[in-house]
Image (cartoon, rainbow, N blue to C red):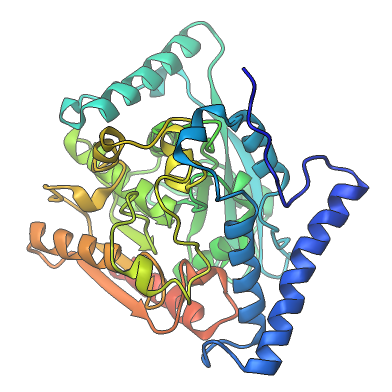
Length: 422
């Protein structure tokens, strides 16, 4: 098949020319930010210069690293295997984790026969069928002696009770004592970025610091190479894996941001419907609970957030790439996207949720979708299990701006919430 030629702004080969191309891509954004900040003043007075620079680099990355001028009809002619390699080559920059902040170790999670699952959730229709196809393949691989695996980060803060412990002891996958509590965190990144969770190491360190717990983060498969429900299946299997290692459900806190927040809800729905014990609590930061992006805030907050508001007819829309890359958008796809395992906001039954903390920014594109989701959870769970915190002037997943006062308040609130639901 002849693929459409694409005009790409970032490197397609890891050589000197490609690196210069990427440096200029970032430098041009920084220079434009400096000019606008000092000539026109801050866009939001609550943001300092550093905040503006990082927000604008993120905006440039999400808005310009892929050509968002392609028509819906071109989707089948795009080589998404190449796009997956391109995204991996140009992943978001990550800040190395300094020993004074925390330390981590990457482990392998093997999906052996003991942990294989069958999803008895026919009411989710096509999503259920896809999950069971993936589960059957994992079972087949395990039975033939070639089990599939993913990696998992284990991280602790050096400002927690583990500060004086031997890292080799505290960075293992098993419980340090029979009743140890952990945070199982699903990272965000529109299901497409965040390879090996490296973009979130400082977020994990802050959460470990304020909760006093170790943070486990499974590195689920990424789109567009792996479409829905690969990510949900991997996260569900990661939860089962930590149980098999000896952790108890009541000692696990599920957490996630953006796409990872939606994965948390998806895992909770599957656990509930399969009559499995749910974790003790859940923390959602700017959860992407509506893959159709239908809320009014997608228009209202365009000027403030770093996420671009793209039409679903764009083949490079994150929803399109994670759900079924290369397929044309249609009314049938729109209906599929309204499955609660894809877009929890469309769930008609959100009962049985554990205590839940939801945090969002006032200025983020997802604001109205999150608000609607929280209202539904509150309606379906009369015990007041959900708490919503809205942070003024903040964009999507503002905890990534961990130097900001709002982010530090959010981390402290997460710590308090987790201790509350011990």
